Amino acid sequence: MKLAGFDLRNNVFLAPMAGVTDRPFRQIARRMGAGLAVSEMVTSNALLYATEKTRRRTDHRGEAAPVSVQIAGADPQMMAAAARHNVDGGADIIDINMGCPAKKVCNVAAGSALMRDETLVRSILEAVVAAVPATPVTLKCRTGWDRDCRNVLTIARIAEASGVHALTIHGRTREDRYTGEAEYDSIAAVKQAVRIPVIANGDIDSPRKAKQVLDHTGADAVMIGRAAQGRPWIFAEVAHFLATGEQPPPPTPEQIHRTCRAHVLDIHAFYGVAAGVRIARKHIGWYVRGIAGAQHFRQRMVRLEHPAEQLDAVDRFFHELHRPVPWDHETQIFAEELAA
Figure 1 (cartoon, rainbow, N blue to C red):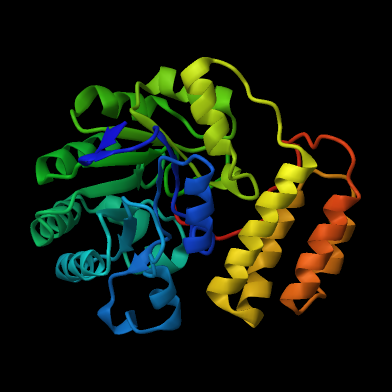
Figure 2: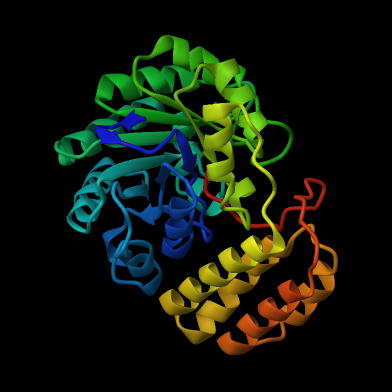
């Protein structure tokens, strides 16, 4: 697929998720088939550029091109400066966040709160596009602020007129957050109204669901978020199904083990001992979700404080398995504050 001037391996993308899609996650998603992996959102506040959190979020060493960095904020000039700063730091694509429903973002009129002010949306988009004329700019948004104000069609037209290269739409309003079911009629309406590529997002958790959403909306690509947690092979599964119509077999325990272990090692290396062990816990929990004995294993995992202990526990858990591991769609997804 061609997007924003780049030839991508497929049209199945990893969504930006705060506290989740760090560099180790993006790299493993790309290795396991994602055509594009968008970074967790980066603040546009220059006063925070030097913080440890922002420096880690803007560390793209070893990432395959194109590197897509999502920026968040509500001031056009600050957003323009943030775009330039991230391009200087290695970003090949700048993505603008107008989809995050988190209160700490919306309370400063950023994220999905921006959709209530269409004039400000235009100002931000025009400022960012003008600031990085050689770098494609994309936008991620929701269908509107609430169900009485679904204005994504207007936002899409503003984006296209402002020079945005592609638009990702999460099929929920800000007030919906992550509850209920995503709706795709709004995405289909936008696809009919604009010429830029449209990417569908929301509740895409299987190859068949991805195809249903593409067929219903006419979108150019799908973006997968929560369903990729502990399941990065979903990108290869979806891409294979879209290309062949065949459902690949589920991963074996050995395959899950290798993937989990490699991911945990990357997390330890990226964050260091203390933070690495803490952050790896949630990812390990996602990898074992739906497997017999996972709950007891997670309870033991939270008491481990050293990387070697954590890896040893992962090894012992998977070595005890002797059967294929189906994905359990009924298992509750761990609560996380996610960026849209």
